[in-house]
Length: 408
Image (cartoon, rainbow, N blue to C red; front, side):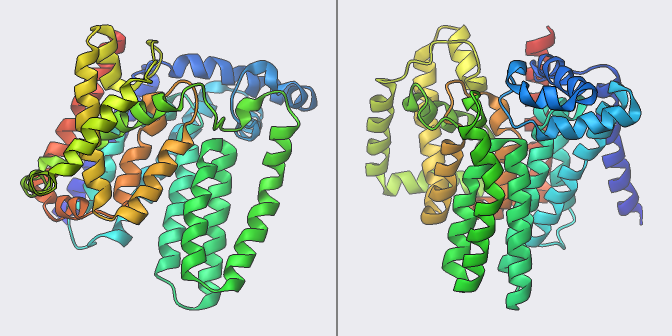
């Protein structure tokens, strides 16, 4: 009972930090206030004149479908207060750690008493906090996407065809809702559809495909019947090489905690010692990609790029990229076929001209523990009693670093 009470008090404390951030207008991600100022105009406009706002939604320069803002407009109309609307979204955001825990409870040993502390790390994500505090759509999209993963895992653990079909459709509905909230989640349909295709009967596959097509028609219509092409994920960005460089370096930030475990550190050194040819390939790949790198702007790029950019020390970034490829490649190699598929989807999701850290935070953390397959993750979970404090310390340092960057 004492242990249970400690867990309740711990998460209540984390919740209080979010409330304090809410009332102090915390903006630890840097751009949340600016984004809220834009979307709040659309929300109020929808509540005043729905038809005119929907017809001229492009004028707000919001690069997402309008449905989330329509939903918020009804809430705003009901409460008549932006503060109440923000307060509600903050509490809706609390569903994400709960769903995250449900997922890892399926994937890992539920008897591990420290497993419940893993979702608490989300409260140290500056982007989770800012999105919750400023009613942005990122957390809501992540909730739907996490539900899609949850139902996918339920599919894998079901046997009767009827229940497999039910959870497959729930997976699809959740993914569709995530995609209509933030459109780049639609790319993950490739992964879920592929897994269903190779695992189940034709009947389930056919129903999944037909309903996928029907539910995607509004999105297809919106993309091809609007001047706002940012509704779609522009797969032909100005420089694909920039994305191949920036995204792995950002993803590495969330992979690094896996190496707090001594067993994992030994394994990666042993791997590259035995397979030195892979190191040479990665060296060549690093130099090759840097020849085409022209991300010459301080906008986005992630923490590691910003350090290099503002200090005018690109040689440091070359080293960061090389180490990132080493870490990413080893992680993928543990279950190459499936991990590489997910990894490529992650890169495909953000084929836009500017990559922001918020695109992969806390998405990367959720993907690592909820869908990637890796012995490194299993080792970390197995030793969570010792590792959890280092995880919290690491992400707390990231939080403090962002806070200092934007406030001091």
